[in-house]
Length: 274
Image (cartoon, one colour):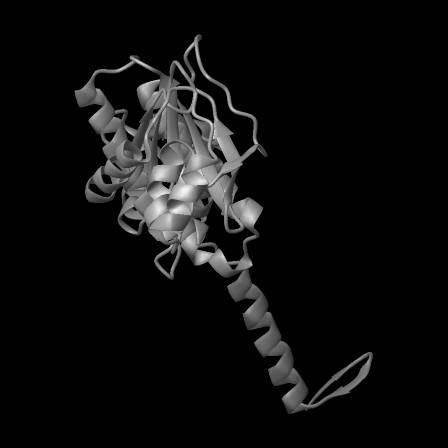
């Protein structure tokens, strides 16, 4: 038993004090690799776009080799994405998965921005994210403009009929509508370049096979769009990720590359957005 100016301290009390002291000392221990990994993730979130390893290490005053090794580990864990062409890093969809239940839809959409921005920069196109809204509408929830001087800009919040443009070709097979209902809805659409339902449906079927759809100036003259689906957990198309460019801006081979890039991004965003 010990005594102090405050009175008598029992053995149990002393042990409690010792335990509290041990807990306090343990809480002050910082595991540097873990702390640096968190610093890197925070930096990438604040950067808002692809960043090179050397830029990250200099900004955070980290050893270049240490920074690179942490980034490589984060890539393997799918919380950071690496662009092998540009040699840059950005926040990965795996990070969104970790905190998925805590995120609002707005935060989920914001988490899609780095991938959208990467495609926009790689191909000099505007990249948009459309969400299905009710049974027969879609709404633009995110738009990343092309970095090119001449570009097409899209206003967030605008709505379109669900069958319209390249997104419509992606959505159409997943609506659960009869052929008669599809034809009736299609007939009510106004295309700037005339398009028959038969030709439209051929394009829908082609889109299903390759995983992305294209609208070559039918919806808006002079504008081409390429859309890929983002499925929800039930297997329905909840969003589409869309590349918007000038008609004729790219040859067919390059358009195929853009379509594949959007398709792959859509598959990754399925986890982040739904």
